[in-house]
Length: 185
Image (cartoon, rainbow, N blue to C red; front, side):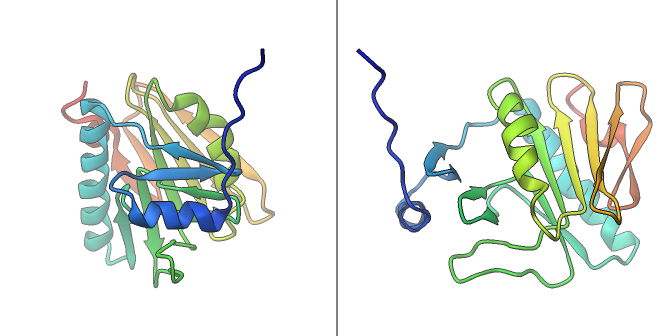
């Protein structure tokens, strides 16, 4: 006896379900995926990022704004995600279904339940967003940050930072590693 088939939904069905739902779900190639609850470390890192980046952009007079995980990003007709942090510089491009279409930077905070999907399927999908310039993966379990930056020729360069890192550059601005992980380690 085989496994039961997973239900496959159209993008329109997903958006209709999402509009009526109390919980958030991501959409990946016809499958609706319930969002996992975040750990305390995950939540602390997210707040640290939102606060640190907001202050950094304001202090540098940059027209960029970070948004939390309530912001649904349109990746493609078959993929919609809620990144932990999305950064929009300039005017947001939001469609009639409240899908954000022009993030310049996406940040995912890795945890036991999400790390594999975030590092593989989601990372590959995010890199297809035309406006995306950086993809940042921050581990909530150890001090480890990976930043993918899109080059002028469209190639992606990966830089990894460990627990000895003093600061990382996000959107061309330095953010202290200690500030990102404050209250976690």
